[in-house]
Length: 167
Image (cartoon, rainbow, N blue to C red; front, side, top):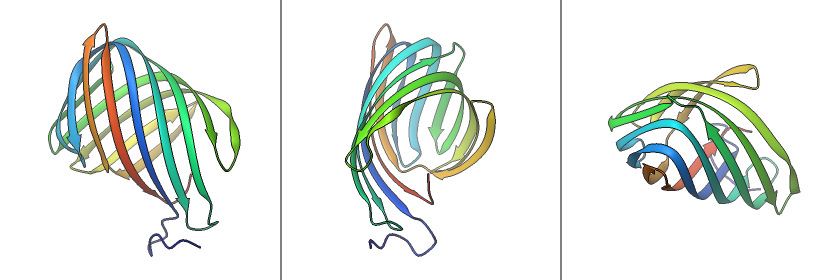
């Protein structure tokens, strides 16, 4: 059994994501919730590829996996970060394919999502309506990200460490 956290956190996930976008204007340079970000969506299409390593304290599983996501975001979605203050709102549909060493090929996920939230530094709250169900997420931002989106083409890169209770 792995030992991750005494406060009931069960999974530790390291991930690296890269993506290409179109239909979005903005710049982003953030680490642990601090930095600068301005994104204005004019109805974007994005493709993201991700590789990850996930350690599960409860079951002892070690997963190595990859995902491919296609995301269509509605016009008017916005994200702003100035220093430690972050405000975001977006509405999108996504289709995600995944394969990993523990489950093999995971069935394709299709989601319709509307998110609104904010953060002070790395600590944030987000209300998420996914496929008709509303949830509130409290999360610590542990990622570093860089992105440039120039309407016709954009590039985004993110590295993240997540410590979660469960999925």
